Length: 314
Ligand code: UDP
Image (cartoon, rainbow, N blue to C red; front, side, top):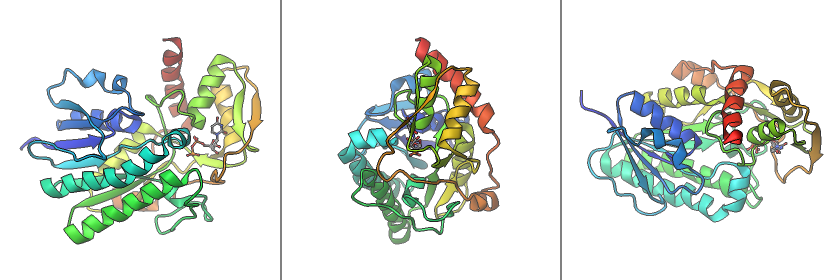
């Protein structure tokens, strides 16, 4: 069988680099594109000697030129943590809109299947819990998170337009909070913040009263779900995430316990438009992809804590 070729935008990022690993393991040729504004070559340097891996330093909001055939395009380029997209609002809007347009153009040109990394943020501060794919969401377009939420909503819209109008074979994954090795220690998200604070014996900063909820998925589970979605024939959005919901305060306590830390919790101001609840309804993924997460939070957290310990001691 002819070797498949996959283009992964954002391939040097947290999720993108795990996808690069998975696709190389599957025997495919991987073309990783990243401009390294939030990605890091450290995440992919172990692949540099591999003949089935190529890296291009490129901003995908500009025309993407890839020679030869392409079978799959996975569009994962975007700042993805609230702190990153507050710092990079224009880049976030551009990569979700112009970048998605360029990646779809490449898919159309090559006759490749296209998978969009969308997000639970399309549901905004949701008025239903858990969130299923039918829910249209509750997003503040002009709030601080709007740059990410609306960019991803636009990205979904243009993906469906290319599917319907140009017959591009598309997939949309709505990714819920995911964690694991290669998250950036300082990306501002709850999990890396709590783990690094706990490991250093610093105060653990819970925003608001800590009663807001999230549901954390271990990265290996997420990658498996994305892989199954890509190989499926489902064109409409599919939630991939772990439905085990926890309050942020309980989560902070759990991190302190698992790191054997003496850190104390301190409460800080809640950022504007911070979603009060978040939990994926994964019925669709279960039924159509036969997928559900396998790694429980304690197991996943222990693996992630080990990774962060090494990062801190470097
Ligand atoms: N959060 C927190 N302390 C931190 C960072 C985040 O309490 O140091 C809270 C944040 O306000 C949110 C939740 O943890 O309610 C998850 O935030 P994160 O930045 O991980 O991502 P989000 O799920 O909001 O996109």
